[in-house]
Image 1 (spheres, helix red, strand yellow):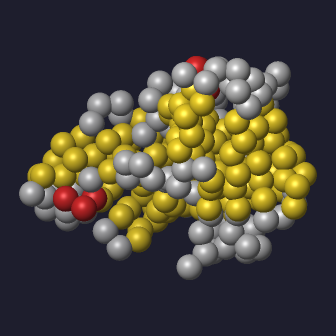
Image 2: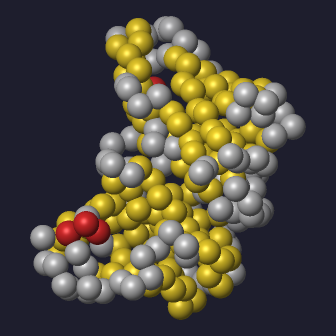
Length: 111
Length: 116
């Protein structure tokens, strides 16, 4: 069956360090993979999209990699700040606009 | 400042009652999604529409849930009769091929539903 896995445990890091979050999937061949940020009590907010023919994408302090052979995406936040504390969701496009979300990883950045 | 709006923001109801949630997508967005989020299941896609036509509602319990788009500015999600297991946060999102990233979804603030 189709499955998306993200680190279920919260990630705690010190301010200034790089946070790395993992998204693994099975039985999909997504054309796109997206990362969203969700704060408590709010809806998810789109961060980055990476296509199957792209290995890496950057936006300011964010970097996403996409390895279709390993079926894995890594999401990096460099020079992390307490304001980066949130839940980060990966999402796969399964055809057209149909999107399946992972359960998310909670990130805590300590000052 | 274009955004997706949802009403009500909070709803507490008793088992067996009908619940209607409303969503106004961003003007010009032609794709609308309904999601449900719980601690146990995460964010689940219930249904989605393009140009007001339902494309996929396979994630929705058909016997009690229904989703419609009476017009391009309004999407509704109804539960009748509601059950305690329907307690969750329901999100609406909209998207448009014209945005800078074609699959970027804009989420509303959600409706927190509690069924007693």
